[in-house]
Amino acid sequence: MTADVIQFTGRWADLVACVALIGCWLLYPHVLALVARRRITLNEAMVEIRQDWMVSMLQRENRITDAALVGHVLSSASFFASTTVLVIGALIGALANAQTIVATLGQFLLDHPPTVWLTQLKIVVILTIFIYGFFKFTWAIRQYNYMIALIGAAPPAPMPDATIAPLARIYAAHFSRAATDFNHGLRAYYFSLAGFAWLIDPLIVPPTLLMIVAILARRQTRSGVRDDVQAARVALR
Image (cartoon, rainbow, N blue to C red; front, side, top):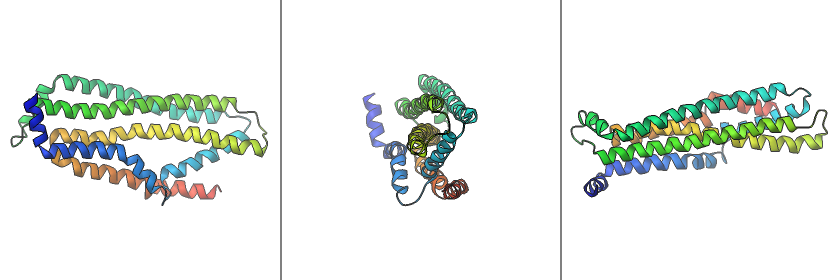
């Protein structure tokens, strides 16, 4: 194993790919938060849309539809959590059969054939990303369940405006935290693509990461969906 470690440290391309993948995955949410200070992102606009939703919900006598909508989002989070478990199981199987993967990749990567230790490391990095995503999905599920309980606990309408405004902010903040964790889980799927690219060749990891970050950033700042949500946010004010 010592020889494999020495070989890995000598392969600067793999080292750069590993650092770039982990760095982009961990730093992207923080960079997006900095961008939100200069330009309203899709996530930021949705925070206020959820607050408007909660205001309307608290003013309604019948809130069955609101609970059903939250339940629909909960079902989406449950689907991704279940799928992530299957992916984790597949990756654990791949980790146990790293020798076979190395033999297969070695037929194509003749100039720099992979080693078992390095291939296992790559799989572990991908596995870590998916495990993180699984925890985020399951935590989002719990928060959506709490959201349904909060809706059920809301006082019956009509309610005084002095009560609606602060309660709507609390409900919207809780709902947005659940949505944020759900988004973190989704990003695990995006950034894992760079991990799979690393299995093939470390040199294609940087352009893969650039493509992933560009797509995610554009959706948040310049997509048609963002413009629609922002327009609705302004119209509701």
